[in-house]
Length: 126
Image (cartoon, rainbow, N blue to C red; front, top):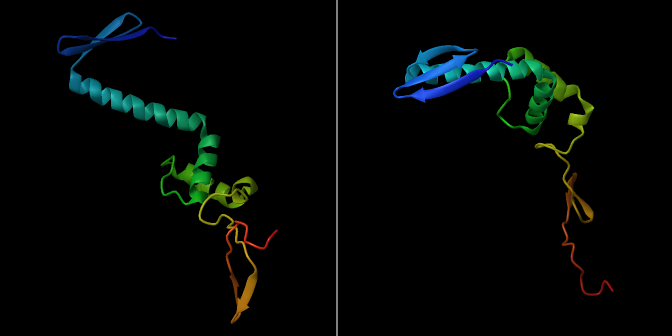
């Protein structure tokens, strides 16, 4: 691994990589820092693309409007994964999860209505 150090000297930032120093003004250091963070995120996304696709698919299936990637290829792969992965489809997440209804079903005009009862004991259930 390379020997890297970053220090602040007065109004400037001094970055030393393998014995070579570069003096950078603060506004340039901020821009370089933002660019490094963005590129590091893209590199991690490329390395862990399978996990990113799976996690993005889980979020999409749950109806979360936020994704984990802006790469169109990975977004498409995530949508395919959300549609075809049985583990994701059968999980109990999102707006389509199973809802439990308690009570006796009653049919009124072709519609099934479930009369809900409390789970507590009634007097006379001894």
